[in-house]
Amino acid sequence: MLSDGAGVGPGMHITIGPHPVQGHGVDAQTVAVLTDGSFEFAGLRHDTYSVFTSVKGYDMPGNPNGTVTVKIEHDLDDFTLTLAPER
Image (cartoon, rainbow, N blue to C red; front, side, top):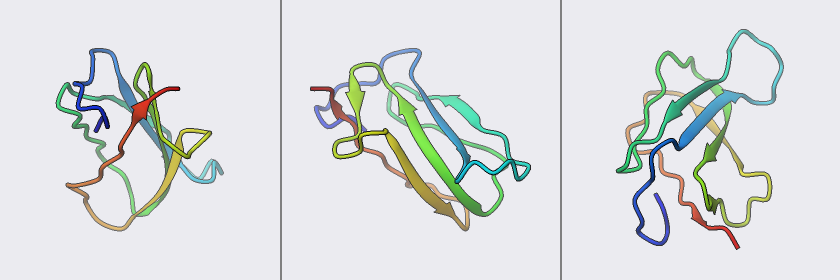
């Protein structure tokens, strides 16, 4: 979700990978972010992951490395990241 209400442009992505990176058999996945801001990862096991976005001109406020940590214990249908215009 973009804080200024703009639509996500083409070619924008989101990546999820193991956290911390330990090489425990889970490769990172990168998927396209659709124009409505939705995305989907498939085949993730229950674990802790690092998630980061690649949306040109936007970043996560208060998060200098642009990465969030999420513990996935079941399918999520409402995971939201809010990005703000870069300053």
